[in-house]
Length: 296
Image (tube, rainbow, N blue to C red; front, side):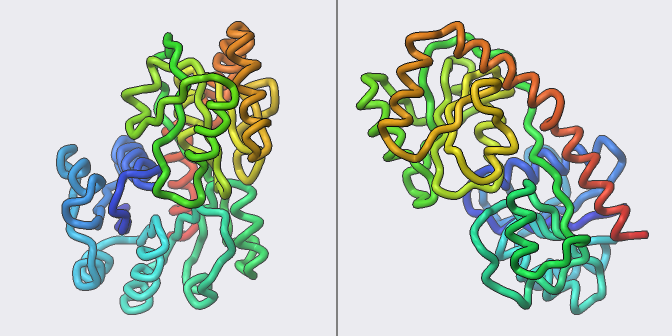
């Protein structure tokens, strides 16, 4: 089995990390992958460093490589468009990853794929509401690596101020109300070992792979009560879900600051949740099941 992966992302965000983890998992199972990514992007550079087969994202290369592969897997919106066009031209099956929770805009594109891999039940519902056939939508949760358990005291949040759907400004406001220092991280794998609490506030969320990564490091998570995050976090068992209001977030920060034993308990249970439901191997295994369904 040879899979062509398409990803047009210019930065390294949750979707790009999932592409890397998926290709690695597929390789371990004997599945060959070819990746088309934007030349010079972080995803392109990392794939090259790992010695994987990678080429520059674009129409001609996608058309050529797709004719040599069994299936095309598009990982973002622009790649969905490109994948729909090249698979229409050379009659290869198309699988599309859908990671975002906002409404479907292009009905034409969403008639083209053999299967849609939704990152959560919430995203699956969004696709079904757009008249994508229910049987064509399969939920495959993100997988994250198990990091060493953290042993720090930092309160972290993602450095995502450039994304209007994310809540860095609201997190900072809440931290100020709580009298807590909040550090914004652009490299979670580097910074999580020094953390005790991770704040993940968002205005729209398919699942929340950054929250999962924090949970894998046994860091207590405070997250927005919305979207796919409700499928990850059971309130007061493996994390805290809060309204997107600064006083509500501040109250959660204050509670964990005053009760570090409770924060550790949430972190430990969060790590168990990842071990049971959100590993990279599970994500790769379930994605291969989708490929097999399409190629039968």
